[in-house]
Length: 212
Image (cartoon, rainbow, N blue to C red):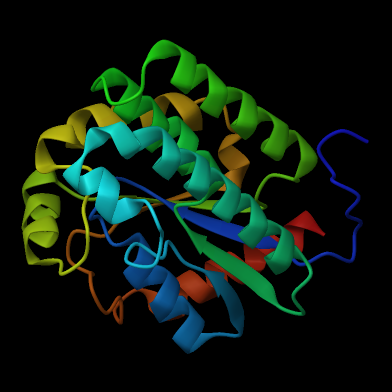
């Protein structure tokens, strides 16, 4: 069956945390994993082979996006076989609908390169079931800009990209069933999320229970 990738009802449930660059996706994934029994697949900014090259030279945009699309699909495949609920920060859908579209709009990917990424994403997503829950993080751009400025990792998207990136994510999420989306304003919560974690864990488990 298309979209199930050979998986069955015994596979682990998957949560993806989405939002603009710098909003706190990785921090929330790590906070949830520390507070609950979750497997995680994280972005690996500093470990990816083309990330630093792309940050220096936009000619590596295609290399970087192909690498990330494959990484995210590989993470999903592994996490679906984990014994516990799984979390991904960003993920396959964000890397295409958000960042690949952004880099195409900025001219880092030409039309043919973008189409190659589109075909790759479509093939990977068709072979993998979509996440059971999408946690959508939002915060005012001025707060996200401050968070980006304080990060000590490679950033290939800039504060000037925030509005466009948000618009691409909004377009994608408009095509997703609202029942699969949990929206959170995290203006006051990054990086610890201590204030919202207990209630959020309850909401997550209630939502996933309803999916079984």
